[in-house]
Amino acid sequence: MNVVILNQDEFNRLTEKVDAILGIVGDTEPSILNGLIDNDQFIKLMGISKGCAQQWRDDGAITFRQYKKRIYYTQSDIEEFLERTKKHSFKKKF
Image 1 (tube, rainbow, N blue to C red):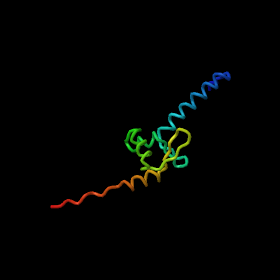
Image 2: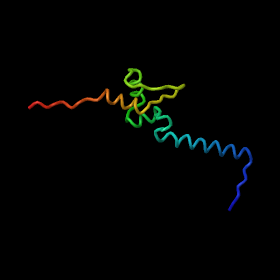
Image 3: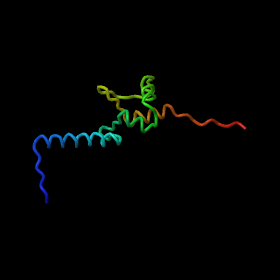
Image 4: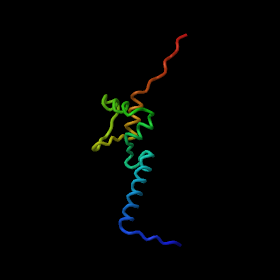
């Protein structure tokens, strides 16, 4: 077994890099913590642009939460939005 010894500065740089990687990896999957999905995850999930998501919020079409500059949605917010905007197919007249 090899032993690696780091000084305090090297250890701090290593932990900062690990934290940065965890931050990136953590943003790739919808958060199950408190059932919240952030705006970037929502945009990917819905296949829409940032402007479209902003317009839906401005129009009051979807409920959201905001902490500082971060926007969050719950699964129930998204389900309610989809249910409200659901359209039934039109009956064809022959």
